[in-house]
Image (tube, rainbow, N blue to C red; front, top):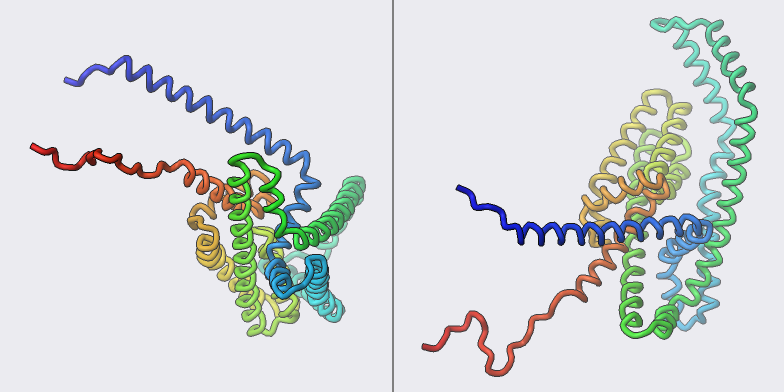
Length: 371
């Protein structure tokens, strides 16, 4: 026969559960308020995040110049200009070959459309030219009926481009100041904070900076792997614009999910209009294979080593970030999770009780008792 429940222990367990629930609720409310404030300040926070990412990429070069006697302002200026030239070179590497071959690609697109129309006119579809023309007329009528929404979309797109340019300019200026004054930030922060905070916050900030640098470098390495493998596949199939497509693959690796889809779509379309459907299917297979290896093998392994996070935690963080904030959430999910892990590990180090040294004459618990 089982023993009856203890009313005292039950009440104590309920009080503990209620207290923990209330504390957890307060934490969730505080997190929601912090996210709301972050959203209201996003026009400032987003350039700051982009500038931090750019600084982590360019800081090794700036540190090298600092160690060789360059003044901080001069080193920061040289590195910023170098980064701008590299960015402009990447854009030119993509745009110039596309512009040179745009006429040929346009002709092949037209030929591809003609082939599709001829294929649709034959069995098993047997779609005649009249039906195709009627479908085009219907699409044109719908487009004319939605002129207002098209204009609104265009205006929104222009606004997005302008906001992107403003963000880029702010990020570049912030990167310059981070490169110039970065080494003086932690000493300045230490002088501004009182008591224990003067030690804890600079230490967490230093560890967070190292972790953020590890994330950006690992992401760049993963993008480089994608670009090399996909570029080799395109080169073997003799697809045009191999180098621009490889560069586009590397750059798009910094935008999870959408970036890979966009780069893959561009590669498949160019293979379709240039080499035909069979090569396009092979390119699609290569991209899917590389993306699966990158998403399930390379990225979790490399980032888990560099960030101190388990591969499963990285995958869950990306999924949660994407569901909460879309593409931006997916982009920021892994570094945010890594920074939270840094803060938690430091807090745990401070909360761990040090083993107490026995007092003189005090016997350990497992010591034999004299008879």
